[in-house]
Image (cartoon, rainbow, N blue to C red; front, side, top):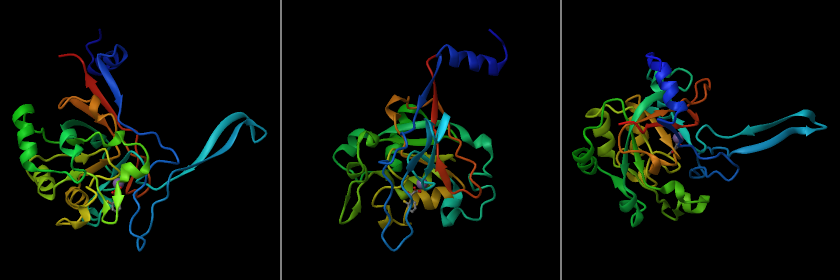
Length: 262
Ligand code: 23J
Ligand code: MN
């Protein structure tokens, strides 16, 4: 085997010593999108329309047009998405340094906690207990909250709305502050439609994951899936958003590299 690090890496992928896990949900017209209160602008759902399919519209080729909001399906949130992150340099999908799109991940399993409480908020105390078992969250890591929420099929169960709004889990404001200040994480990722909890509009500040993470020039990943296939530590994520000019985010094919070597 080559002694070159990158050739060793390619070999490890080819021999499945390193496995590649797809953390992305398929984009389709039924992909749930976040409905905001009617006084606000609304995101377009994913729409796809055939241009031709080896037919009189194009005898030898198949292709589609598609349209959607930047925050549709499995997607990346850039700091410019939130007003708190608007003045950072290199804060949009086209200007973030590309090396930021490869980073390790810590996965915190809260499946049991969420089962009886869809409004569950992950706290600093819970993360410190996780660290007792798995070690300190390394600087520059993604913190991913595994809820199995992505196993809910259909917008009704996924968004879980009632008169009081959406009921989905997320991080507590104090935890987001801790992860930024004390752990210097690169961002937060979850399995539900956005990075914040459904009731995050009631917290201080409102939408703490958006407000504090993006205020600190950090990122978000929403609508992830297959987090149940990741180890608690040691996975590396590949998360490049589309290079949309001044983009606030974009649908993203999120991949995780997991080593089966010890
Ligand atoms: C706009 C306004 C509020 C929220 C969001 C977008 C998201 O969750 C998002 O996808 O970034 S909470
Ligand atoms: Mn988003």
